[in-house]
Amino acid sequence: MIALEDPPGFIVQTEAQKAASYNGFRIEHGRDGGWLCYASTTAKGEIWIAGVSKTGPWLLSIDHAAVAAELGQPPISPHVGPGAEAFVFETLGDLYNAVDRVYRLGVSLPDAPLARFRNATAGLPRTTEAERLVVQRVGQNIFREALLAYWGGRCPLTGITDSALLRASHIVPWAECEDKQRLDVHNGLLLSALWDAAFDAGLVTFADDGTVLATPNLSNAGATALNISASAKLGGLTAGHRENLQKHRARWLIACHEQ
Image 1: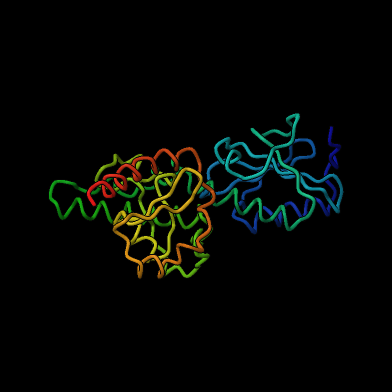
Image 2 (image 1 turned 90 degrees about the horizontal axis):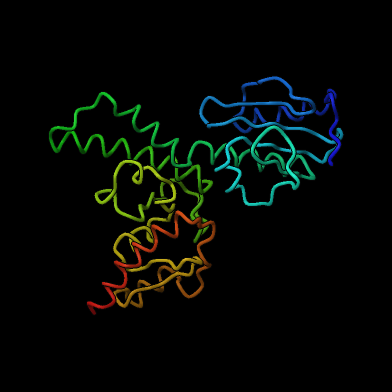
C-alpha cells in the first residue's frame, strides 16, 4: 500500500496545483484524504493528484475510464485513489506529461467532440445542400481540433508538427458515417499532407499493427516521396482504429483486385 502525504504539505499542494493548472485543470475541487482534486471547463472528468513526499513519487488518479485506458501505462495494482484508475510517476516532469495527455484525451475522445458539434450546430438549418455544407465544415473543424489534441499535434509517421502541413484524415469517409462516427477520433488519423492524400486516395493503408501497406496504384516516385521503405509503423492504434481500418483495407483490396 502506498503511503501518501496526508494531509498534503505546502510543497505537495503547490506542485500538484501547478501540474494541474499548467495542463488545463484549473478548477480546484478540494481534498479527499491525501488527494487533491481538479477539473477543467473543457476536458471531461476530474483528476486527483497526491504525493508520497515533497520530492515524490507522484500519483495521478483519473475518473474517466476511457482516458485511463489510453494513457499508455499500467495502473497501480491493487487499485488506489478516488478515481477509476491511478498511476504513479517518479518525477514531476513525468507527472506533467501525464496530466497533459489526460487533458488532450479528455477533450478529444468520442463523446466530447460529438457534444461540441451538437451544441455548435443545434440552431443551423440543414434543408439545402449549401446549409448541409456549412454544418459539415463545422464538424470537420471540430474533428480536426480533436485529432490535433489526441495525437499531440504531431503526425505519427513523419513527426511533422507544423499545423499547416497536418490533415485530419477520416478513416471511414464523412459521407458514409453518422455523426457519432464522424466525430470519433478513433475514426481519424493526423497525417502530413502527402500521407493524407495517399491515404484518402487509397494508395496506402495500414495493417492492424500499424504496418504501412501500399497498393499497386502507388508509383515508384510516390513511394519514394512518402519514404515508405523507411516508414515506421503507425503507433497508438486502439481497437476502434483497427475496426475502422478494416473497412479502409477492404477498399484497398478492391483497388488491388482492379489492377
